[in-house]
Length: 272
Image (cartoon, rainbow, N blue to C red; front, side):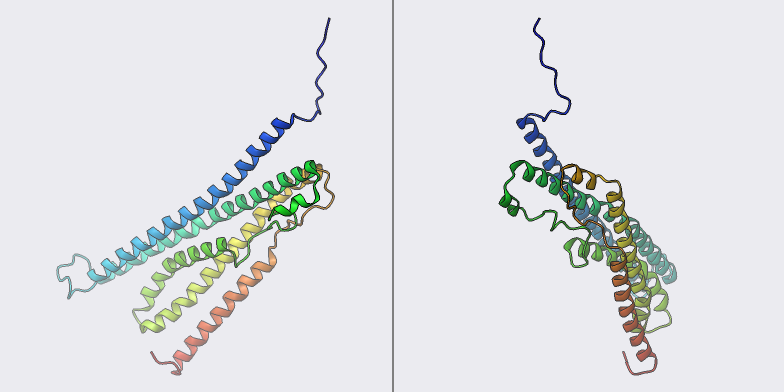
């Protein structure tokens, strides 16, 4: 009786199936990266819409605080002022809560880049063509390991942080404007504004570094890299300490400048 040959458990898959799976995996990684960036942009646009709507509402409520324009207004100026402060503070808190979402989305993008590089490396091993790898921009030598302050993704997130900090700082400005001149109230509000922005940047960079380090510790990328038989593994360890010190130094410098301006204003060197 004829018997079919036993299938080898470690036999290589057919070439067509292998190529199809590689194509599906590559498309999944690129689509995941694209959707993460798209979701980040939508969150930014959503929050920008909230802030702009709140700004229009605040301007409208400010008109109600002027009895000469609306003599029959049902609210007194103090109630309107603290309603503005409560609205701005709530919007600012919403923005702060959204910052960790950007961390997770950035991690997805970087992990998708790692996955595409892994697939490229596998294809290079199969093709065994030395110059074939020069056709790819991202490889194990150029693969980004974290996020630079000059990157477009961080600048977008930084603008988001500025928006939510403006909302958080507005109650302080409204409070200080009762007994200080407008320019002096603005300068002292910046004393609160700058540390809040700096703290958000520090927390964002720290969380991003921890997320990327946790992804590396789970060995979803490095173990597979070794299994491909590649001895030299890429350096993917994210920087944590250096970005934190840079953010702290920049915030401290700007805060020192604002404090110096406040001092010059108090002693009468600056007059506004």
